[in-house]
Length: 275
Ligand code: B12
Ligand code: SF4
Ligand code: SF4
Image (cartoon, rainbow, N blue to C red):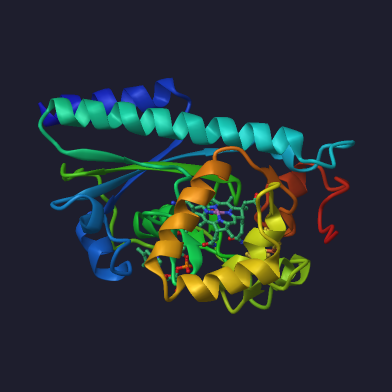
């Protein structure tokens, strides 16, 4: 029965045109992820984190006459919907065979941890643990075939997925030695030593009428560190606008040698543009 279930799920994923699928060992992630963001914190008894991912068409990042990134925004929004729908369906299939399963939101809702935004489960860390590729200095995930344009979704499940590839983290290429292109391309200096100043990035790259300016967000972050009430309020507040939002910056992605669009359209006007 488990074998049929697995092939049914794999067939379903193919039918949704999702080319990347892998499983990370949830028990191993329980050891490495911070408390509150481990698979076991959301699904006690979780055995696997199933990962789904699909590359965006690269032309959406650099279309002419599109200062508002309209093509990009529509493309990733529909991918997040696809990932959420597919994760729901996979969870239903697993549950029909008795395995408790939680579809992980592809983006929103966010939580705030010590005043900074976080997902419930970090897909890029799970993908690295599944041996799918590496996290670069821009803190984004690099896949050996699809580069840095994958968008993720996933499922936590109590089913032990046999093809789990835990322990083989590090497949594919990481950052070439000495490369700092993403760090230089960031207009707000948010990237440093493989870490990201999330407040600086968020207030620059997310375009929304309700997004507080950076100085205000820093202040709110400092208060949130001490106040669970304000943290909960900010989670509700961002739930509202992270469903539909604009984008103002993708520089750390397009400046990277792992951005597949560099090969496709070397003359694209936004590549390396730090405006
Ligand atoms: C919150 C969030 C943001 C925040 C914070 C970004 C960040 N780098 O953490 C903001 C709003 C700034 C943001 C911006 C962007 N985001 Co974003 N974001 C998320 C979200 C929802 C959660 C990420 C998260 O939890 N980060 C917090 C933790 C993981 O980060 P950390 O501080 O680096 O963690 C440290 C420790 O706490 C610890 N740790 C934390 N968790 C874990 C877990 C394990 C197992 C381990 C070992 C360690 C560990 O290790 C880290 C190093 O010390 C994910 C979706 C998801 N659920 O994964 C998308 C996601 C990361 N975003 C994505 C994208 C594309 C973007 C943007 C390009 C959007 C844009 N501009 O168009 C930018 C890129 C900015 C950048 N260079 O990272 C994609 C990335 C895809 C990819 N190929 O990597 C994701 C995966 C969404 C998706 N569904 O595909 N994002
Ligand atoms: S998305 Fe823009 S602001 Fe955010 S880290 Fe990348 S380059 Fe910096
Ligand atoms: S630009 Fe260079 S340093 Fe940054 S993520 Fe890409 S390869 Fe790594």
